[in-house]
Image 1 (tube, rainbow, N blue to C red):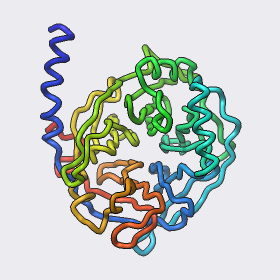
Image 2: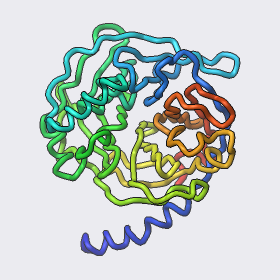
Image 3: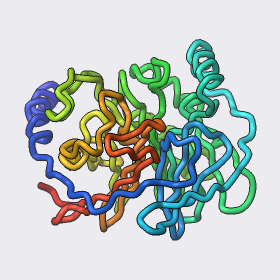
Amino acid sequence: MTRRVLAALLLVALPAVALAQEELKLSGEYPVEGMPAGNLSGLTSCGDGLWAVSDREDDRLYRLSAEAGVLKAEAERFEAPPVPPSGLPGGLRMRAWVASQFRGGALDFEGLSCDAAGNRYLVSETHAAVLKIPPAGSAEWLALPASLVRQARVNGMLSHFNALFEGVAIDPQGSRLWLAAERERRGLLVLHKPQSQWACKGGCVLISETGTEPPPAQLNSAPAPKDFSDLTFFADKLYSLERQGYRICRRSPVNGEVERCWSFAAEALNNEARRYGSQPFGMAEGLWLDATGAWIALDTGQQTRQDGEQRPIIWHFAAPAAGWGASK
């Protein structure tokens, strides 16, 4: 079978994948107390607890602990060293610097992941860089290959302000790292560390996609660019959080191809109390997943929800009845 014929068959099959999305059931909603800057942008589990990061704060992570129906956030501070050159154009870097003068968060941390050794990994959108924070010791930027940004841009990614790297995932061994380019074009990239250095093994880019898609019917709004807002790695699979489509998709960690998707649109949008009026807030920004379910962190932008809630929100969805590994 030729590549052209195979591509045509895949295009025909894609709508079927979208139509087959099972709706996830919300099992818990938790306001987050103790994140004064709000703007929750990344979520992971590390050790015995959940951790979060805000894209408005460059010097701290938050450990989350459940208490009386809320998640209490306790800050762990760190100091990021100077950011190494990334290869991003000067224009993008300047726009990001100007924006940070008004909103804060010059590093704009947009994703958070953790390996089995307890190292935390944060992706900086403004610098297309990854910061590693060990359980003990100083934070350090990963020495990513110079070809990473170049390959992404050749494939149409990392071309627009505020649409750069939006998610990061690490495998438990700390030897494979995935990055998600947000939108226009969105894409997935992977790095390997066979020895002591990160490298593009046969190329960094797994997929690069363009186009728009309609939002869930409840929103009654125009199509918007396809996007990724976070990644997580679980049971040898990569999972993408797709904000515009209100869904989680299981993907091959080898080639990025989608295998199955689950929707959370009904729980997110059918209850008017969870809406933020006409404002684009309450969007899914952080994802962590295990055998029991999925945790989704919302960027509420310090805006007030219809029911009066103003704190950041984390939802817990029960795992599908057949588990995340179900093929249909």
